[in-house]
Each structure stands twice: as C-alpha cells, then as structure tokens.
Image (cartoon, rainbow, N blue to C red; front, side, top):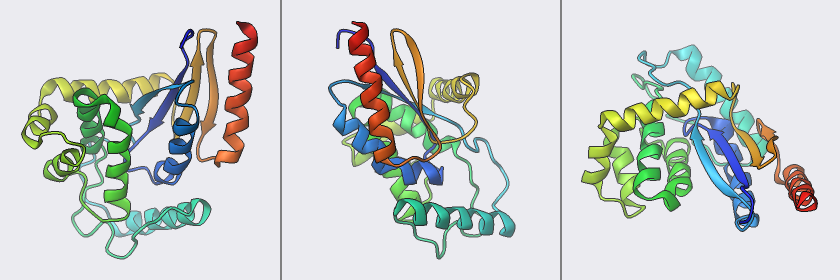
Length: 213
C-alpha cells in the first residue's frame, strides 16, 4: 500500500445493529483486503452498567432485536434472552476484543464476531471473563494468558481509550465506518447500510484517491 488507506470501524460487541452489520463488514473487508486495513475501535455502548436489566428495558431491547433481524436477516435467539439478573455491561466484551487485538491482531475481527454470535444466537453471557476466555481459546489464544491480560489495569485503561476515541470522533451511534487516506476522512456508514449501498461508495473513494496520485 503506497498510501495509507484505513477503514475505521466503530462498534460494540453487544450492539444489535452491529451484529446485523457483521456480514456487510465481513464482505467489505474480504472484497477490499488489498486496498484497506482495518482499525477496529470499541465504541462503548453501555460500559460500566451496574443494574440488572428491568422488564421494560428487556421488552424494548427485544423489539430492537426483532427490527434488526427483519431488516438484516441475521439470526437471533429471543426466548430466554437477558435472563433475570443479567447486567448489560458492554465493557467486558469490549475489553476482551482489545486483549485479542494485542495477542493475535489478525484474529480481532473474527473474535469480535464470535462474541456477537455467542451473545445474540447462543445466549452465552459475554460479560463473564470465563466465557470470553473460552471464545479466545477458539482463536488459539491461551486462556490463562488471555485472562491475565484481561484483568490487567493496562488493558482496562486501553479499553477506556477506545471509548474516549469514539466520543472524540463524534460517534454517538453504532455501527459507524469511516474511510481514511492521506487527504483525510470520509464517512462510509453511520448506522446499518446494505452492502450494495456501500460498495459504490468505497469504489468511488478508491478511484478518487488513484486519480489524485
């Protein structure tokens, strides 16, 4: 790559629209793997939440999930989701992605998607360190090493830096995708968008950059 071309992806592992967007982002990364490098930023949807989900929150959230499923076709398991006592804290799975990005950078997006699937389809509690460590092990990462990094103050601080970067970038909703080259930044998607809507934008952006030299 002669010029810097980055696809910044701001997302959260427990964001339903990000789960709906996962096949689109996967396709984009596959199609443009020679032209773009991924910068995966944890957005911080609900970090640090302490209270268990209430009945009204659960009902509203499941309604959103149904909307995502209808629009994107992604799989969800609704019955039994977010059981009594579940705390919807998105910091632990976000921190886990930061760990994987450090230990095995090439697996970070695969791991991110595996956490999404574990939560939305398999109803695993992805706020639990052991669950996150098991998913990391599926990416050939040692559980003990993962958990040591996961509990470290350094990783907690770096995860907060992801959240801060998202806020400073003006991102207030997820998913969000921004293209960057030497000339600056171009918004690709803010919220869900289908692949057929985004590929012409990427093609045009790449063509413009080639014309500029």
